[in-house]
Length: 255
Length: 332
Image (cartoon, rainbow over all chains, first blue to last red; front, side):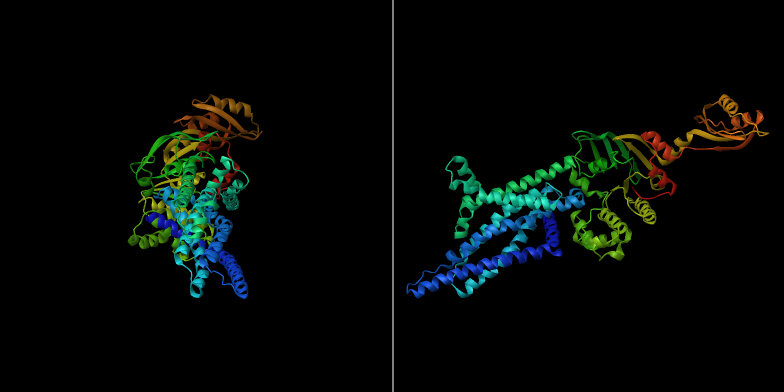
């Protein structure tokens, strides 16, 4: 446990001694802020028109602002997650520092968990900037915090899975660009592959849509914790980290 | 301290290390010598538990590298060929990170970092970013990283590669000074390094050990097959080199005579004799009794380089000769 924390702290430091950590934070905050602003504006427009017509418009901040915002962000994160994970192992392999980690009295699993945890914490910081936006809703409106918390939990779980996949892909190469590009491809594919079920009712299409990311996020965005979705996300995390461990082990045979 | 038995590493197409066995006693400095690609790094990586061997076994400080890798890793300090440093970290931060990785307690950490800095003379750059350091300093930070947890065994892969001659000497002195507390294995392809730093040499070529011996024994072995350079002059300016050669070949104990240069006035021959047999007296007598002048007679002992080349069966690379001549140069 102590070793995981040592690795995690070192990774977190390296996000913030280089510009990458700040760039990720700012990019995410700006994009999230933009979406927040357009969604709030849209809702205001509709309510105003409704008032002009003399019919009160039923307002539900969670349903009309938080949910669409989270859905949007779950797409935006596909672009940013590869940037978080791409250097995790690729950089260590390129500079040879992986030899230091692999010859220190600490297990591969501890190294992997430390790195993944650092990526998750980095992502949590990014998500934190969105929560700042949301605070306005609580100040000026009547939002319920529970659905928001569930939504954030869903974001974290989903991102945890994608980050685990990214960690795995980063452990396969010594080139950060390759790691980033392949991770992006994998995330995007995982997101869109459910779409086939819209055109095809065959079993394989249904299976693909079950495996796809976006079919497991909507209930979280609504504020509902569905065991099925939690199991899905935890499975993705586990599989990603498991393959990373296998990849680390193969390093001991090949390099 | 280190026992290696039949250690083997096979890849899909080639065998990098082929059934090597050797032992290293506590407190020794052992040089791992061989041309590039001989399997030195692979062997070291297996001993440090970075690579899993395909066959054989090894124990370090009494722990098996396959059964108890964590115990082995606790007792090994390892400096890979390129120092495993993070350029974005400061020297002090880096060393305390490595110290924590190696399992130092919070209480010991500060003093061990200070000790390692002092010992490897990097105390003056402790607050600098590693990325901004020169190659020599980075190498020393790498060494400091290897000794931070006071390991029983130090494994250093080409510790002087890429340094300038002054830094090379400093690094060698540093390694020698560490020998008392640690058992050291260092790899190199530079011969003077071995004769200057190590007590024991393991010569490895194409994945196999070709010789294990102490440095003095190897040098002795080099001298045992003696060869003598003889310069013979004609008394009145007339000399028949062929006759001289014939005469020299008749001297008892001489195996071979090679004409190095021949002329009307003087000729030089290299006379090789069997081991443990000095033929210098007989050669001198034979020359003088035949009525020629003996201008020069000196032993041309085989150098460590020649032993090495003989053992590894490789041609003398120009680089190695240059390095030998300047007694310590740079790799590549």
